Image (cartoon, rainbow, N blue to C red; front, side, top):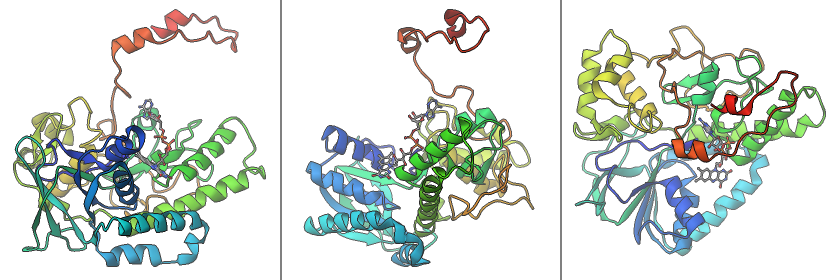
Length: 396
Ligand SMILES: Cc1cc2nc3c(=O)[nH]c(=O)nc-3n(C[C@H](O)[C@H](O)[C@H](O)COP(=O)(O)OP(=O)(O)OC[C@H]3O[C@@H](n4cnc5c(N)ncnc54)[C@H](O)[C@@H]3O)c2cc1C
């Protein structure tokens, strides 16, 4: 997965970073993205990001959680026994809170950045109070002078490989994951999936899923006692992910922040007005027509960044589910939960196959330069089969 950032006026200005990029720079390179930084978006991931910025020497002016305190508290406080196994995360949370208090960083829930402004790079941000659906409360706008802004609205899974393999997905447009059963099997025979493509639940859950999928894919018995702790860790991760989704949903009214000239697809510089026009023209036609009209998603990132946003906006503008979305009567898990609490059947329930034009379908899974391909070491000839193989031929 990679960071998801919702568009807002000015989000394309230099100095506006994804929360993950800012953290990677601060933690990995000891590079600060700015001296006066606002961190905004939703989810507990904003806390370690703010902490890394502080430790690297930035001044974090505000930490803004878009969901109101009530939504966050209800999401985390419900069924508290399910979180009893996550003591480590509570300790981590306490450390972040202590750090924020020590540096006097104000934490504000129900407020977010709705615009960034500046001449050539970000110089100020406009923050506003939000209702639970993320519509702006008029008259609550405030301007803050900054030299950097970090935003994160959750994560988008990289689904091109499972989609290319034909695996069914679950979820709703903009929040789709590979559907797996209790043994990490996808709907595609012989294909297993693990990690964030099946739901964003953190590194320990991804590791447990990977070990489980690896064992079973290698022919290990599904009822082996060694798998019990892995399944337990995986299920705990899923419970945590479900909580995360309940406590930090993306409010449906965020498109209200957009202006006609707000860039939605950054590669092709498609603005919101073009998307609205295309949605009007494309009524009754396939969404690929809108894609060709606006070029949204046709640039170098091939919709990896704007894809979920364009899918959601198109569905909202046309009043129709995005292409490949579940049809009426088909089952799918609630929008809140990233993981079904229990998936025990195969093929997974609540899953669906994407049409070939689905937003995650990309003919090239990962673009690389020809020079990189040429410099790659020759593959070791595979001697495990009796068939004569020629590495050069296979490489070409
Ligand atoms: C900035 C950041 C900070 C984080 N901090 C924490 C933390 O503190 N605690 C925590 O629990 N979790 C954290 N996470 C989440 C954690 O990293 C993930 O939960 C975990 O790495 C997921 O493992 P994965 O195997 O699913 O995905 P990844 O580790 O991302 O591995 C997927 C791999 O697949 C490759 N890949 C994807 N698509 C293709 C393709 N088309 N072709 C070829 N290769 C492809 C990718 O390059 C990558 O190497 C953080 C994530 C980020 C981005």
